[in-house]
Image (tube, rainbow, N blue to C red; front, side, top):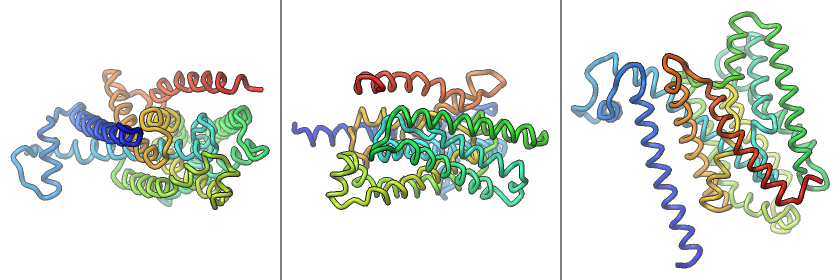
Length: 350
């Protein structure tokens, strides 16, 4: 079997496995909870919602309410946030040409959370969810532009400068959040703590649909830019010779990353390392082609957050662990491994 045929077969198999795992995770997440609902009732309720009468749909209005008011919006939010953060991470790694780039590591999530906290403390939240999303987008965009401007030198991105800039931006974002906590009232303070820990509890349909629409549009745009990312991976000089406007591509991608990260952080808080772990796992399985990588990262990110959310509300009886805590437990060791490999590949940091 030729190499392209083998790669195509691997991509097809990976797509099937991802789809099966995602559907399974969604069904289990819809079933598990304080109110008992069976898998046939979940499927029957979905079929009835699209106009297909069936005998599986629950007759109990409480079961129907548990699914459509609490669990389904939460699952949709989990999939949308996971897809948005994973695609944002893949795009950042493409434009920085660095495997360590990720919205949480380089401070984009902190910038977005700081923007959302400003909206809460100043009372802009009274104008609706879009006020939080816009401020989160502005904070994420500012952090991304700062990291991009500082870490670029001599036409390339330096690993150490990138990480140090990320540390500085994260520290500034943390200090800003602490200052806002000092100024805020009790209700606002609780909301800001929510951003720092990350949680999907209380997800509403209108918020979930906002994130879902932005994540879907952002993924389509990123996939459309996939061929240009492939050419950019050959080096900036080669990309320019092949007709790519590198700076315009980078600026458009930075806005895209800020949009995806900002809308995700605005409604669920900081969920770190998704954009680091998922694209690397997908790249190891599917190879470096960005179109396949971006699509698979969207589904992989959705799967990761659905599973992480399921664990967060089932590991502790009667309680719920913060979502950001779980993703950091997974992503932290993964980040150490990447650092070690990067150091070995480059022969040190000098």
